[in-house]
Every structure is written in structure tokens, then in C-alpha cells.
Length: 132
Length: 132
DNA sequence: GCCGGATTACGAAAGACTTCGTAACACGGT
DNA sequence: ACCGTGTTACGAAGTCTTTCGTAATCCGGC
Image (tube, rainbow over all chains, first blue to last red; front, side):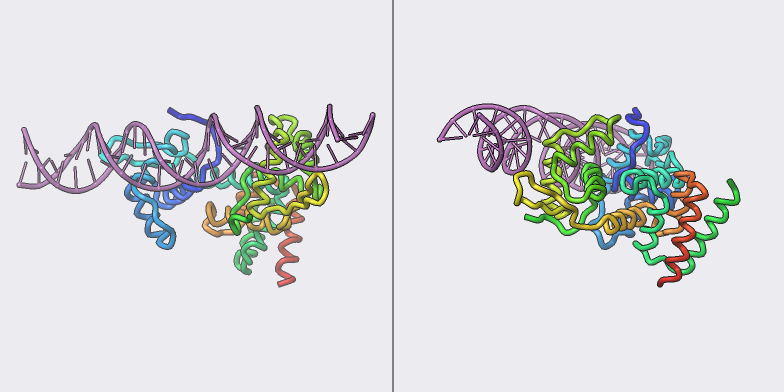
């Protein structure tokens, strides 16, 4: 019963997607436990909350559900890359007037990227320009 | 009657912020007209909707209101840079596990950045590394 | 001083998001 | 076959966001 084609995941949904990207296909309990440990500081999310979100995400088409075993197993439908690309593209449009350079500039300022990261970014630029 | 210190602007709020960044201090009508022209394709936002959003944004502390003239004049409180930095930092945290390099990579892929933009980004990297 | 047009203020409706209580269901052990 | 535990299903509450109808207010012109 898929509802819509593509919208961006909400904050709660994204938190779950990150767990699924990291762990691969998982049950509700597995997701919930990782989230409880990860955000030990924040108030942790209840089991049925995670379940509900996963049900909604199934409905939206963000994840697939394998119901063959007692505990259903959820897995992402879109790769981490695709989702991140979509999110950054969306932000680019909504807040940066489409200027990639400007977004990169602000990203560098937001987290004082260290030398290692700067070098890595340079390498990305070379690769990107080379393989076009 | 400020309500909160810092949260990210919603989509509707961001659309208005972009107009204020571009035009500088503006009245409701000015903002509304720019938005109507800009999003000629999308259903345009009504006057009282823009007004309401600006009132809410005043409440949240995103904008200041000058009530000295008949038509109130709104202006941003936080610079475009600061806001964009906050947004990109937020996305970095929520979706990229804090990896700036990964975000840049996906940004490059999302919009096939042209040679011009790539060069500009390289220049940014040089400046950034030089002036630390 | 009054009227009309524009502006602001107020509140409500509709939808999305998050949370959780509770019921229904499934399964393993005894 | 029954019970207890764990899982899924359902629905509702509370908040936030966007939208807009309507009332109240202001001001310039007559």
C-alpha cells in the first residue's frame, strides 16, 4: 500500500535509516536497541514508536518488510548514497539557490574540517573531474 | 515574546528567508509578490499566509519587526551565512555522520557540477587551508 | 469627521509527525 | 491444551506547520 513516490524522510525516519544502513536488514528490536545505545543522552525512543515508524516507512516505500519470520525484517529500499544525494540536492535547492560551491563553503566552515578531510575532498574533486 | 533559541527554519520559513536575504528588509506585500513571481509554477502563497509566517518567525526570533511605519518591515536576524551553516551542519549530523567529505561527494553527484564550479571549490579549499 | 482600501491580529482547520497505550496475535515450553 | 512472553496492529493524543477566513485597526482623501 505504497502512498507516495518520493519525499524526504523525516527526522525520525532518517534516524532509523541510519541504523539500517549500518546494520543491514534488521528487526524492530535490533533497530530500537541500537538507537537506545546511540542516543544514550537523548530520551530514547520506545519500541512501539520504532515499530510504527517502520510501518509508516514501509507504506511510504522507504523500506521493504520481510514477513516470513516471526519478527519481521526491514531493509532499506534506496541506497545510502541515493538518499544522501536526494537530501543534499533538496537542501541545495531550498537554501543555497543551487550553488554547490556555496554549500561546500558553508560545510567547511560549519565543521572546521581538518587537513585530512580537506585532502580527501581534493582527491574527490580530482576523481570527479577525471572520470567524467 | 521569543519562544526558542535555535531550531531550523521550516520549508515555508526558509522560502521567506531567501526573499529577505535577497531584498533586505521588506514588507509583507513585497515578500509575497516576490514569492508569487518566483514560484509561478507552484500554487502561490496567499498574503495572510506570508503575514502569519512572518509573525511566527518574529516569535521564533528568526526576524525582527520594525513597527514604526504603517506597514511593518521585517528583516532577518541571522545572516544568510550563519543560517546556511546551521542547516548544513544539521544535515551533516543527521544524515552524514558528520563526514564533510562524504557530503561534498554527494553534492557533486547530485548536481553534475560543471568545470567552473569545480574550480571555484578548489579555490575555496585553498583559501580555507591558507587562512587558518 | 467619515469612508474605503490596505494592513495586522486572531483563531481555526487540515495535514503531517511522533509518541504511546492497548488489543490482537504467534509461538515455545510445560 | 494452556500460559507467558514477545511481536504486530490499531488508533488516538499532542505538537507542529501551513493555510486562510474574518475581524479589528490604521490612514489618506474627501
